Image 1: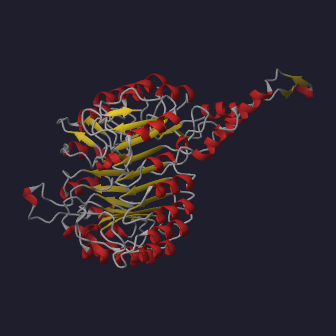
Image 2 (image 1 turned 90 degrees about the vertical axis):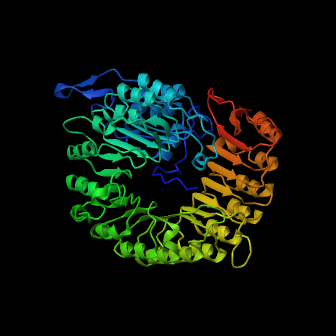
Length: 627
């Protein structure tokens, strides 16, 4: 089970209530699409010869709204704009009229109709669907999050729409065709962890003449043998970013080569595993201006005629602008020396698909003094992480993924690697660390050495594992993180944890917005501490933990202010979930089964709760029961 390797942030800013209440469902920001100019609505003017000429004056409220609209055009912070919309009705209206970028963190929290009625000038939409635990196969297929209602509504309301970013949505080829045909100036499509579409849908989007960005990230793309790469406009494209590393089917390489050659603005290119090193060299020669490159297959195995021939990789030396490298699938470590010339400029390096050992990592990392983001597999072991700590003093983000995610897998990295990173990379802001064993001392050291941490996700893969040296729960380690890291907004906990750890989180985690809990806790009091003590909490996801009805009911005061709550394999009952639904009528309470029909027994396997301004959804499948 691999953590999703996506680029869209999971920790977004606080949202605004479309209905004027306290719900957090929509976030938005604005581009500077207008500027000050003209008379500004003034009613008093000076005529020829100094004679004062009185012109009709608008109502004072109208003057204020005109001024406010012009001011708001320069306000881009989501949080600030959300605060503005809550001041009064006139500010609410003015703020809505100036939003061009709309963020909706839950596609079921508001209907397309309501969003369109309020925000009438949207040019960019970010829309999220399924819960994050869908990445771990905990959400059954065909659960929902369909894009069709949104694209069909926007086609009529926003003919000027330019950008769509979707995450964990169900998207069909017909949806993509409608998107491509409805928006003449469409420029940007980003699909993250989406499914339901094929290369035929990609072909429709590729035909958009002004398309600048087509990014497919961790999607499940159906293979239907359509040559979508050949569908981009001739003779020149506007492409700035093309990412298709998740597409499992081969692409027409000759068409791809011609495409990059006629895309002078292309800066980001990430290839799938069917593009080998020899072909990569040919592409790089045509686009030396690249800043972000995903290498595809870092071998020559797809070209049997050249297996015994050393590929020419001199193109890396000519790419003077490269700052981000990823890919390295099916890697042949002997070819890693090809990237040495660009390592000193790299700020981001993604080896999360490269099964390399410590020595192979060290051969590269010794040149990466400016690296700020690093993703690796745990095959690099503690020794590899020690080399990172010794070299990468500017590191801001580290993710260590497991090759073997089984609970009884071998320990490849441990507290030794974590301690080394904390001692060598004091500027660290975010860490995701999969391991089999850990100690409180190492986590406490990280909290002291890296006090600027905003994201701390420690995933001890074995269930209920204590400090492997002392046998004590991991309470003090996680307690130190929330106490010493004052800017912490996202936390994932695991290992053997008692209610004491959750009391620390409730007492000190005042800025935490996202909390993930797995196989942890003693009793209902643990969750109660969190729900009563974390006022900023937006997203709470819990699996395989001993929390029941009492814990669930302790959060009634806060659920309207949260984006969602997910609980699976806990100790909830149908009676407890029904009580929440009865006492909070504007909360959608979904009980999710695993079969064609929802289990109507008293024990609840999966619970998903979220605030909706439009009530329960109409597209719930049979295995979902909405209380």
